[in-house]
Each structure stands twice: as structure tokens, then as C-alpha cells.
Image (cartoon, rainbow, N blue to C red; front, side, top):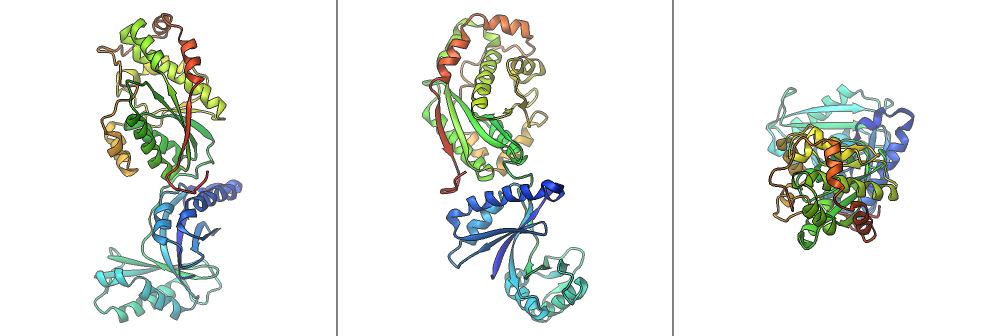
Length: 396
């Protein structure tokens, strides 16, 4: 074993008696992601997941990129393995970190000795490795406060490892630990970010998308698929269920009070989403709403839409402003796709003057102008289903 990827566990380490089950779910997720990267061993020891290539054909760059997006790891790093002798550790540090050390002016060495049977203590190992590197790289100076490079030495059960600073991991908890929920996904900025945020809390996602051809196009649907593919880099495979609402939307447009059109549509979307969620074994719904962002996202409007479902509705972005949502969208690489100019069904037939403070009695009376339940049943009889996964051969 010459090189490994070490993933440092975050809050999983605090899960007590349930910790092992969280680790197993996380390791299964990693193994699925790495199928097309080659053969790897994935194991867990001392609050760390070890990803070890089993042969020279394993693609470590691909493995690192995919491990960086696994929820559950607070940090990750590639590390060089060495035999547990000071001389071997010194040589490995010089070789493995050569590029970083040649470009640096200052450095320091930090050591963690998990194997307490190792004859040298952590300060002695750090001093020995530091002295060796100063000899090999005379241009370097020691700076224990703000070094250009920190050389980390970890002495563990079977090997010692050397590496530079760990990079931030995806955080959160492994997908599958938090139950299953259905996310209402559009082509905008908010819903993909909401989906990612809930996946970060361990929620397995089923996505529900509403289309209205010919007012919405296949390009709009393709946009949603591409957004979900970005989310699936973190969440794993997502089942996408598409519901066509053309007739229902036309009836709302033609017969219901215009100023209530958006709220009435949202109510039918939640009804449809709840019916699908129950069939899929989901325990909650997820939306991308942010309080006050548009007329249908006021407290009064949200109260009117939630009145039609009994399932919990999670709104992870409810207190976020647009700048915060954009920042996350850029982080997960959905921003550029989201701003492509394809209509979704939420943006067609938008009232000129929507009512921002509707009450439930008013909305229910407005709904009475159509046989929405019959139209909804018709729409749910002909849904389209596909699976979205960023990684080929990754399975579930």
C-alpha cells in the first residue's frame, strides 16, 4: 500500500451505539461511487474511513474527487503510507510531499500517534521528521504559527501516514440515515439547493417535477435532469417522477380568480406530491421556498398550501436570502444550469397582481370553480419515471 485516501468522520463519531450503522451506510456509498474508478478496499478504523487502491490501475484522482462529495466526512486527504519506523517515515515524508516542500518557504510537522505502542512519542516523531526535512530542503524555515506547509504524520495500527493539510469534506451525515423524502424540483435556483441541503442531513431523495407541455419544453425537463445529476454527485441515485399538469393549469387559469392562481396551483402540487410520496415510501416533502421571496411564499400563502397535506413539509431554505442560496448553488455547481432561460410550470400563467396575504376560506372558495381532484387523478395516472445518477455503474 503506497497511497490511500483518508476520510475524517464528522458528527458520525458522536453517534454512540448507532455509530457503526452510520459508518456502514457511508462505506457502502463510497464503494458504489468508486465502481468505475477501479478496485478499492473501503474500511473504517479510529474515526477514519480508509480508501485503499487494490492495484495500480485504480484511478486515485477520480476516487478523490468522488470521496470529496460523500456526506459524513468533515475532511479528507490523500496520504502516503510508510512502515512504522522513524527512518521510513522520514523518507516517505520527503518523497511524498516533495512538490509542496520545494515550493514552500516555511513548514512545520504535526504528529498524531494513535498506536501508543510505537516507541517514540508524538513530539519526538515530529522533531525527527522536521530535522530530516530541514537537511533535505535547506531553503526551508520552521514556522509553527503560519507555515506554508504543514507536514502531518499519523502513526496508526498497521502503517504510518504522511500528508499535507486535510481539505474540507462534504460534512453532514450519510445519505440513508435520515429517512426518505420527496423533493419538488423545478429548474430554478432554490429547489436543487434544498434537495442538496436535505441530502446532507442523510435524507434519501425522490424528486417530483411538474411539466406543462407545450408551455414547457423538453429542454426544460432536460435542465431538471442535469440539475439532479449535479445533486446526485452528493446524494447518490435519485428517482425522478414527472407529472404533467397542463389541463389542470389551464383550468386554473380560465376559471379560478387570477390573483389566487399560483397558490391554488401550489396546493394541487402538494396534493400530487403527497400521493406520490406515499407510494414511494417517503415520510416528508421538501420544497425550495424562502420566506417572502415571491408572493406565494408569504406566511399566509404557505399556510394555505400546507393545509392540503398531512405530511411534514421541510423548507430548508426558509430563512435564507437569495445571496446565500446562490452561494450554495455555485458550490454544488448547479448555478449555471439553473439560470438557463427555460420556462418551468411555476412561471407560466403568473398573475399580474398575485394576492400576497390570502386566507384559507378565500382560496378554498376559489378552488371550487374547477374539478381539480378529477384533473389531478388524471395527471397521476400517466406519470413518467427515470433514475438520475452522476456516476455510471454506481447502482443505488
